[in-house]
Amino acid sequence: MFRAAAAALALSLPLAAAWAQKTVADGIAEYRAMLADGNPAELFEAKGEALWKQPRGPLKATLERCDLGLGPGVVQGAWVALPRYFADTRRVQDLESRLLTCMETLQGFKAEEIAKTAFGKGEMATIEALVAWVAAESRGRKLALPQAHAEEKRFYALGQKAFYFRGGPMDFACATCHGEKGKRVRLQDLPDLRSNPGDGVGFAAWPAYRVSSGELWTLQRRLNDCFRQQRFPYPGYASDLTIALGVFMGVNAQGAEAAVPALKR
Image (tube, rainbow, N blue to C red; front, side, top):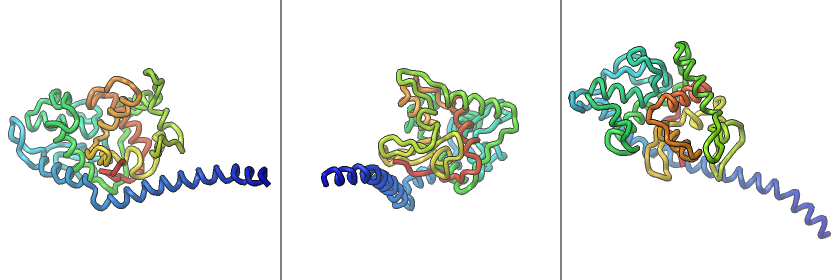
């Protein structure tokens, strides 16, 4: 009888573990759904819209002539087609680097100084609010990053190489956590970023409001934290490396529905 009970217990343990894991994941999903109607990111969106229309900087100008890829001042639908190549800067740019360009050329700010500012401080906080609003104006649209220009293709290849590059004291790569399906760390599911991981999970979810820190995180900040966890040196803000990773993830997620700003733990 003891052996029979032990065998039954052994068989039940994997089922119990699977049930518990599913319950935890379901609980997190329910928690996010409860907060979704009052996502604090809405406060950042409102601030970003006001900043877009407010004359600021040494030139006392608004950002209403900023070209995010669809023409001066066009915001709706811009986020789902970024990063992309811009002829005026001869660079592939994501939303944050493009906002830096507009703040410098239209308003007179110094992009280099802003790029050195800590996240959540000074004009970096301005960019975070602008990102929240611009991204929200594309909520519900499908990701459609262009790949027609040679530089856009080159940046995809660079991002792919960076994604699989292993190094540092932990011998980590982006692919270590996000290079296969069904992985998780602690209670956090890890999306497979080699393909479309689903709406609001991978690239389509950033910027996002982080409940644990009470802050709005842009994709640049999220990537910065990934490099920290890999024990790599911090990449330069809006650097070609971070933009290339955005191209790689965004193109892989083509067709995903933008859920930005999302809500994260």
